[in-house]
Length: 237
Image (cartoon, rainbow, N blue to C red; front, top):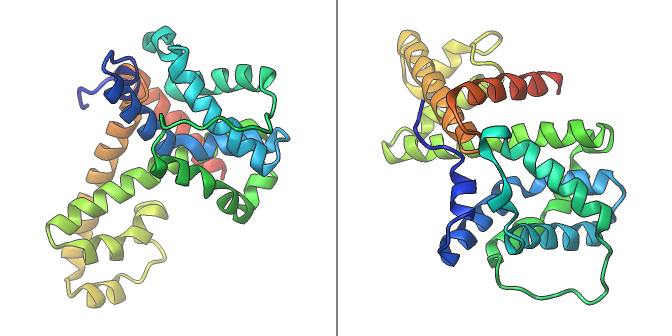
């Protein structure tokens, strides 16, 4: 297991304001969508949810909420859910939105694009708010991992191999109903070499997934438990 422990929270606790703002940006970019879905399914209209999401992240930082978080007793996923429920219980929409530069333009743009994604996500309108939150949390983690792995493969000039095997990976990691002969020809690889490449990709995926999960928990035991629970959520989808 990698040694990083609750790294996002550690950066948010940093006394260096720049490090804390960078961590807030990373948190916003990485996990804004599950929180946005939770807000929308709990009755907030699109523009209210946008404003509330922005204010939620800023409030977490301003009130030093993360300084109070005990990583040994929880997970980032659960901590954010509890904080969000408390926030929504007292939040009221203000017609005059406060401007702030504490969150980057890039992170804000990610929030602004959430509604279109929400409308296109059919299950987002049927799942319970809590199941939707967990399901989207899993999806965000997987998307980050796949993006990182593709970048690693591209750096080695093997992005075609990743792109060819990605559908196999996301469908369970087995060739199953996939046309291995056709894929072998498309990638100019023998079937045996293709199986080896898939095995290596699966190992890379598991390792990167553990790293991503360990950013949000404290130790290996908790990471393994979080991994199992998130996979259960994924299988329910």
